[in-house]
Length: 299
Image 1 (tube, one colour):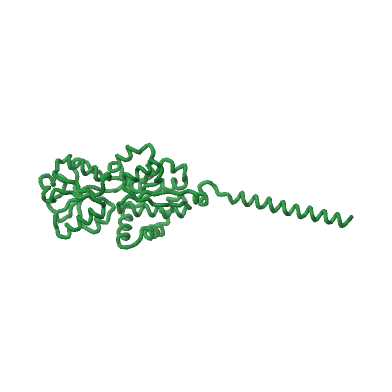
Image 2 (tube, rainbow, N blue to C red):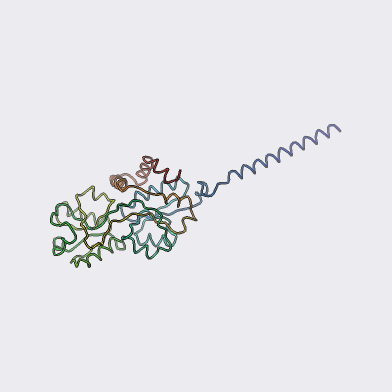
């Protein structure tokens, strides 16, 4: 009888241990469940950043990609012109765009797609854009000075791709000033190659320009004042798809605190043009700006 009693106690003890172990495992599993917005949850969320073919877009795009990946998101970059990027944002195919020029240059896109977009943050407030000439053209110091002197430039202003805000505004400005100029649309590299070819020979050249851009580091240029107000100083904004806040709340909160000095962006562009990869330059910026990164992440 005693042996049976001992065996009964042993079975009860073993059962208690098994139940305790199961309860502990259940408790551990419950504790391991990630909270909403945590890095583990973020790993299930894929984000796409739109990258336009402008050098100013590249540094903030890859810094944002680097930091979002640190937060656990799967991030891809889709390269396209501005029209395709805004269309993608409106449809939800693209989640984020880091280089929206407002209020003027991308006004048409915001008016067309604004109901589906969120103006999330100001990246930097001192974007400058317009028509530029080399400083050796001492007699051309404003858009008004171009009137009657279009032959100096063979009747051509060199610009970037169709669909860009600066292209549409340039065409309006040609009409507004009654200039006998043709707008030669090209890619940014194509425009700069042509401009450099003429500047190397100290010949007249007229083309579009903006900051941040290494063209102002590489060449002595001046932006021509526009008395009719076609071009105004712009702020550069972060734009997101309307659904991002629900899809990735931690990413949206991070982007809403985004800012990056225009001087930093220009320095990064120069490094990329010098042979560094966007990923390398982005990582270097993140490591050099820990306080700014913590602030944007809300840490």
